[in-house]
Length: 341
Length: 158
Image (cartoon, rainbow over all chains, first blue to last red; front, side):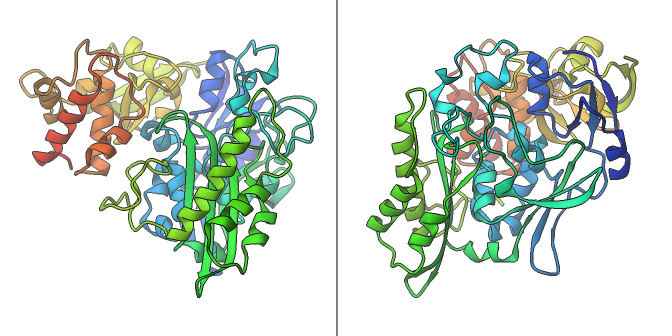
């Protein structure tokens, strides 16, 4: 690994002042250090933000919103009983990602900022044909350009629940809707986000209304093996059910687009309707309309369609009282007496 | 690039060191402190052979920078037990055939400590999921799962 300057600021102000072109923020390092070891990323300076005070708490604000400090670990958020109760599909998505060792140190901000897992982005000498790896190539939201899918599980339920990203930078503090954080692919590959140079994520926030879906919320993740693998397709589905009808629906897909992919058209179709399997198939059809196969990954479109329909059916059946032993797995038992938090 | 001063606790003992910024925790433990129980495996955060505890939580030392460890408390397999006074998990790994070549074993032991800390009475599915960050090419895993289950059943889970 190439040598680099290292600083460990004690306040957010110090951290922001330490930023310069070529610098990178260092949290848990599970993504960044890995990329630095291959040489794919070579920052001149790392600014270790893990000692910044006040960024590692989960709090409920006066307006009912839940604010998650940027440095809260994936494990601590998933294991927080109050959080898991209010946002079960977020906890399920977190627990379906990576392994315990990585969840213990990976931060929530780092999770939503992680790089695509395609070899094109990760290797010093990437394959010459970016279309060689269809499993990690986007079928939606590319505008005709090739792009790797966003690999985050966590971001999928968050975008369905209208999460907001709080940032601070040289230009002051601002908020970005998570749905707007990841930019559509341009002509060059890369991890393109709406963050401006020197901006630092301080927190993620879920609005009070997001907790209204807790009774019917699931994250479903399909992958090459039942654990420790990125999704080939995933879906976060939430329903607010009143009198046997869907009062409001939320649906977002993972591993199909360069960003966590919210599908408002499918949500609108579900609203006000009675629960039935044909309706969910119809919503899934709408969710994948416009999808285009690249690199031989037409299977991903059908897989995502079925994953969306199944996630909706699972959400309609109700959030399990206890977290499955295999979170988000289609093979997990739907009932049991296991509880993680 | 100048060195960075580190003061941390490793296996209960205070360690003062000077490390370059790009020193991995796995390199620091093995090459600087000669704690070679922690293994280098895939070096990409997949195989888990390098697993150690940082402030009680299991992490992969091949993806951690030593320079971030100032003030932390590290436990490696050398700090888990010793000959004549094995940790209950080490004893059970031995009795249940939870190892053959032994290369992955330190990492599995550290992951199992974290697993039982979070869930003192896991069922087999939970044990397997809890070990998803560790690879073993000898045992087929069954002996490892048996060892962790019997450790939990003996009440050593917490």
